[in-house]
Length: 419
Image (cartoon, rainbow, N blue to C red; front, side):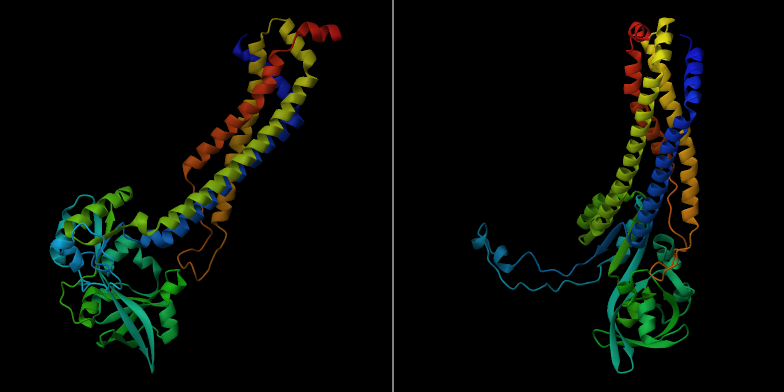
């Protein structure tokens, strides 16, 4: 039969059972809307949680780790080669903590086309002196421009200008927890002491809040030169080199290569933050499972409605087949009905889901733990909408296939004789 005639008949059957058609379409609409809103919110939350750590973590970090020397004297003695060595109470070696030949390493990294940017650091344990009380902490000597460009350092400054670290000598930016303990404000001068007893007064030029409370209670930042002065070290003294790559997935390979070339310890972001990737995967999986279950439930509703429609329209189906419609034509009619419900309900669901996402995105969400966030996070990735409409059509097609197959097998002689 002509496609136009089949379409007209499907349309007539849809309108004849308009209430049931609307109910089925609403089921699909609700499922798609919840699927889009849930997936957008959950993945927005994933992006937020990962961003708290991953956006501020180097793709590759070069450093010297304190660890026992694997080459003990007995293992280097020829007469004991190839034997099992049982050695107890091995102490850490006297390996230097700074990176040897740091200038040449930085130049080599800058020439590597895989490297997006580098940020040298000098990390040092210190004591914040508050009257007769010493508070344990850590100061990180940073290049504030590189840190802001690569690791969003500026976004976490709650008060002050981060560039003051570069422009004002002997200055420091305190974590909010440290500032609260010291009752320090911008413009105050605090005293810090290293583990070796060196002391230096530093002017507070800013307060930062990372969102990780324990981190903010100990961490502070100064310029690289200020920390080098605090430690009485030369201007080549660096303890860490943090690297951002153009391709995040290449970090493990690049880390192994740099560890071999520069004879340093190298840690890639995937190794350092494996637990965050696992958490994100599980949350996304839950979102997809819930959304798909909603669509399957809607599919059962369409299946039941089409089954009832076929039962009530047996006379119509018999007449269609008696007047020349083949079984495949009847099957196309009912599949067309199912897909029409899926398409209409799916498109409306996408629109409502987008509206719900926008609404969630504008709900105020202010907490001291997440200083950069003012509303609930939502991800508007186009792939969620493509997945939603695809599942809508697939689910409704499957829901309509078996009733349509049943309708195509109706014997008109049996139906008419029964009448």
